Length: 187
Image (cartoon, rainbow, N blue to C red; front, side, top):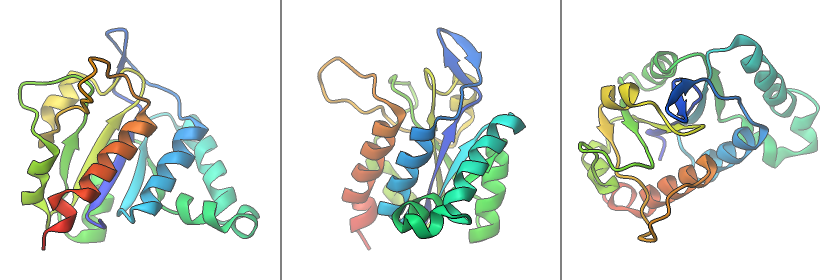
């Protein structure tokens, strides 16, 4: 799954109908990096425009990847070495282009069914192209950004009428479903 990249978006996201910038959380850093390492995806980008907030997260990651933490907890090192912090989506796309030689398609996720959303299974036709799958914090990615993306996925639907997962859970479910789908299984 090296052609799959995950981006955790902190801006522009919505909270109660207003566009905001959400905070980076320690749980999101650690848990999503563990997903990235477990499924051997190409990388995990944390997208946050604030330099001070990003600096704090970078220091935490550096402790486990380059500092004392690397030897104390090799499992955490393996997970956190997948993380890159960038200020915007374009920076993540440029890094992926540099790594792969191909511009990634941007893939959006949302908890709300949108008119142009497609099933996860439709990604199989893009198997040879890098995919940057965006997940929103707070109340999700704002509509203007969602509408500008190349692909928008159908939301996770367990047919219960309830759909308010933590972003860590949503990333886990999407990546596992992609791993178990024809995307990964087909030649």
